Amino acid sequence: MPDHYFDPGRLASFADVLASELPGTWSSTYHPPEHKDDLAELADHIWDMDLVAESLAMRPLRHAAVLTREDGTQLVVLDRHDQRYGFLIAAVAPRDIPTEAFRGMREPDGIALSDDPFLSAELVAGDLLSRYDAALAQVRHNATDLTANSAGIGPSQPERVILIWQADGSLTAAPATDTVAAVLLANGFVHDEQTGTYRLSGDDTAAQARAVRQTGAQLAAQGITTALQHPTARPAPTASAPAMPSSQARTATARTR
Image 1 (cartoon, rainbow, N blue to C red):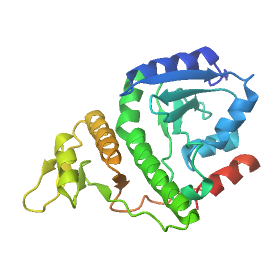
Image 2 (image 1 turned 45 degrees about the vertical axis):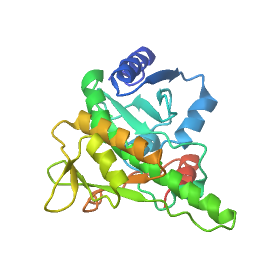
Image 3 (image 1 turned 90 degrees about the horizontal axis):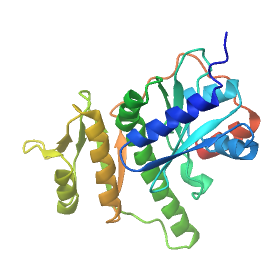
Image 4 (image 1 turned 30 degrees about the vertical axis):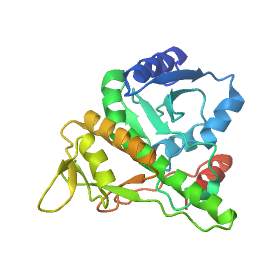
């Protein structure tokens, strides 16, 4: 069977188009096999304990493309190794945050993509980016508390807005202040007079993802954190993933439980 999953030109071209289609301003950087140190460092920071972690446990990272947003947020695109055409994409954990800030955090696990970069961009914007932005906001909040504790001034207690996924794909929030309510309304949330909550439709997932990012950024500018929450936990996987290589396993474990 041809080694279709190791095609430098195919991966680099896909990543370039994908970067141009994602909301916001993104750039794409291809890392060939010769960039061994960069690839090893990248593998240690892939923020995933599911599909992508399993893939890396089966095969080391031979090459990859890193997508970087203007605010420094990064995603990594890599080959699939299950003989299916397409790619995997995962979040890259920020390198400037201490390991302790990741403890207890659920990873914004990566997803599988087809080889169509236009459809893939819609999937990334409507799924992975929303979860990634929420996870980033939480670990930065955790890091702030760690800094405050080390300085002996106690943990900070900023206002926090929880966005809860609903069964129909919408998001709801129950803001405690007029400031938060105003930001939600400005980004497409609709106020429900009966329940007092604010709802963001999930009919257009790309528009929903943009609204979530903009809401998070505007609230963060006012010192207010945001987080996404599911009403019920994700079902446990039916089979355990293969053991991860030692260096990657140590890093992933340190960033999680």
